[in-house]
Amino acid sequence: MRRALGAALLAAIAGSCAAAGDEPERSSNARPPTTAAPTTTAPTPVTAAPPTTTASGVDLCPYRGTGTWVDVYDHVPAFAERGRVSPVGPDAVASMADYGVHTLYLQVAKDDPRSPGVITDEVQAADFLRRAHDAGIKVVAWYLPTHRDHELDVQRAIALARFEVEGERFDGVALDIEGTQAITDIAERNRRLLDLAARLDAAAGDVPLGAIVYPPVAFDVLNPTLWPDFPWSELTTYFDVWLPMVYWTFRDPASGYRDAYRYTVENVQRLRDHVGDPTAPVHVIGGIGDETTDADLEGFNRAVAETGAIGSSIYDFDTLPPAAWPLLRTPSPC
Image (cartoon, rainbow, N blue to C red; front, top):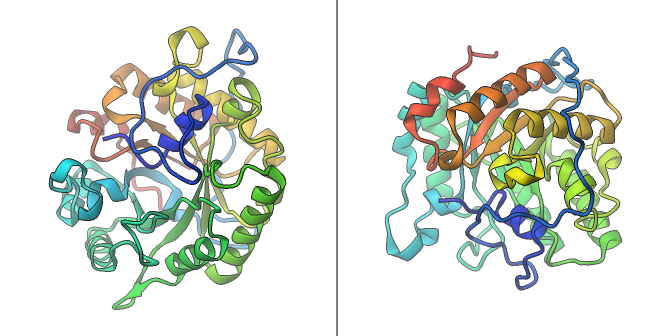
């Protein structure tokens, strides 16, 4: 299944029209409108020494090394499609450990009528958290704010930072910053986003915060009208790690960006240029799992190493074939 993280990304880049605040539940390999021609060669990668902590001393370990992604469509029964059983339950943590996963990125809240509470399924989230920690796997909880109900977005984000069961807490919290449809006024959307980030940061303490963002190539080359004046520099105040959605599987070969190596390198470099930090901590998300080839993974791994990204993952656990995991395995990073 290919939903949630990045489905809204594809629809927005491709100019799809959905009801305000709605998040498309399926994605396709559609070609986005190109408003500027990409460069003919990939930029020269600059290797940066991966930082272990932020300037404030926040530990970046949860974002380092090999990760995997599970969204509500895969683990919450209320979101199972066409009545089928959710394909990824807490039992899957054992397989993640066997595959060498260091961090599970788990969606535990959602702005959706099927998720009326602050946390979508507290029992399920607690079970994942316990099992992951028992297996030596970190857990980063994530949420996609739509900005439709600002105070509810704030409440849900802070709930992830404060979630605790039997002394177990999430090792990190990440915001999936791709909601564009509910608030079309860019200045107001940026105001809500920055207020949300500031309040989450104040509540998170030493919990490292991640910003899951559109690939900068989308803003700079493919569709500059997607989110003009995206507040890159302002967000650096609140987030410790950047997680760009570098989905080369969404790109048409004719665009020049279906190359996993090139697309990864260029997005990491553009992101660091935008935030004004050549060594900004980056965990790169590639994908989509069942549309990714061995050659893609080889190029992806090379780009991750050459750019000094602190971690990498493919979206998502349900779609990535088991045979691909040996190509992603990395030594324990911390």
